[in-house]
Amino acid sequence: MSNFDAIVVGGGINGLVAGAVLGRKGKKVCIIERADRFGGMASYAVDGGPSLAHALYNLSPRALKDAGIDVDRATFTGQQIDTVSLADDGNHIVFKANGVYWNDGSQHPQSKAWCELIQRFKTYGGLLRQLAEAPPPGGHSASLSRARLAEMLRLAMVGIGLKMLGKSEMRRFLQVVLSNVYDIVLDDLPDGPVAGMLAADAIRGAATGPRSPGTVFNLIYRLGHGGTITQPTGGMTAVVDTLVDGAKAADCTLLPGTEVSRILVDLDAVTGVQTADGQTLRAPLVLSNLASPLTSQLTGPSLFDIEATRRIRNIRARGTAAKVNLRLKDASPLPGLKSEQKDARLIYAPSADYVEAAFNPAKYREMSQAPVIEALRTEQPDGSHWVSAIVQYAPSDLDGGWTQEAQDRLTQITVDTLDCALPGLREQITDTQVITPDQIETATGAPGGHWHHAEMSLDQLLTLRPANGMSRYACGPKGLFLCGAATHPGGDVMGLAGRNAALMALEVQK
Image 1 (cartoon, rainbow, N blue to C red):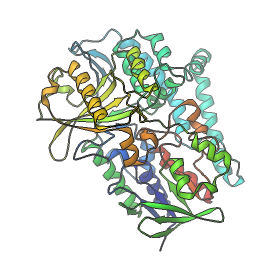
Image 2: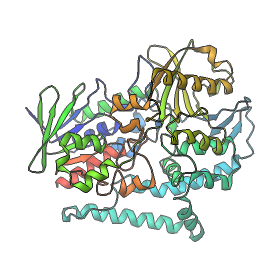
Image 3: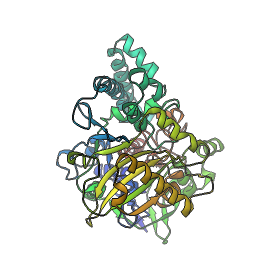
Image 4: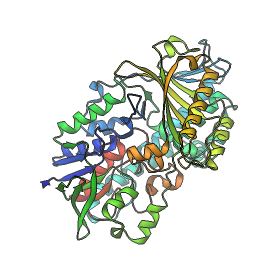
């Protein structure tokens, strides 16, 4: 039997950050991961192919700093990559930090309107970022007076920021933030590839379409954290390795290949965990990187009241994104792209209407025949070259199940869609891999194979994430905290959920 001050269950990005933050505060920490490798979706791969997560979306400098990682010296830090919106006629559109351009380098006529819209969203998102970098408002314990004071100051700063927008812009913010991305984007842009790219980014990984309420919030949220997308040097493996090194530097004990079978509780307070191989690890704090349904299964449902159990059961986490990896025969450039676009993020979303139409079959448990695709070209450590594609919409509850025939059909749809925009790509493909939402759930524990572990909808955000009464990470018995992507502030590869949960656990223990 081993004794620790805190145990982190699940060694994904948030779990590693949470463990490192606690370790740097002087706690003796153990991080347990069921898989042989840490990193969760950022490291899970099949037969040498690309990992599920293939790029960095808004990895938080604040989370890295609190985990003891020097952002400026991190070896994985890469350059922000451009986005290329693929067109069937070969006239692709390139999105850069300073504007929108045609494939030939000339400026796109919607460049100015796009820049103004993105800047407005970033301004709005900057206000929301202040809420994301701390636990949601709430809590009543007198022992948290210092935390409540900081919370009040933070809310005051948000209010001041709103005031500084000016009356008309403040009204616009309040109108926009709860609306759908389809209406808001098409107020400023005609429908087409520029609007389609924004619609695709707003629904990434979600079981919603651009006309769904609150989808503009997701886009603003991402842009508020900078909206930067980078392909890290050394791939996602390098990112995970850096976080693992950070946890080790914080004197955390790491146990890969170890499954937790039970969270131990005595007198309504956690006392540690029991592993599947018979180990008993003791600690008064347990932070679970798993979603709340799996966490409650490890403690046993009797430790949650009826209302909490009902809320956990009703958390929506219906995965709609699958991964299709296409192995290429060599390092030849992808057809139809310039050499400087070889590392660009490729988006297939010809219009906002196209994105909405792609979502429609998923409502009825069918895969889209004309999907939204985000793809990156990657080189694996063994020297193999791949097109790594996230394909939306491929529902976890597909009618008839994800049989081999269904997987083959998804692969064919993906290849056909990309080959239309990149004629000749089909001839470069030597092998394929499909990772369906049900496989994602089995491999990573993400409910429904959902990339954010829970839907990023208005009723599951901020003080309602993952559910009312559990938004400040404490969950069930005393000493148990959630720290995964299903908690505030949600998905993407930010690390903030783990960082916030660790700081909240430390505050409660004072």
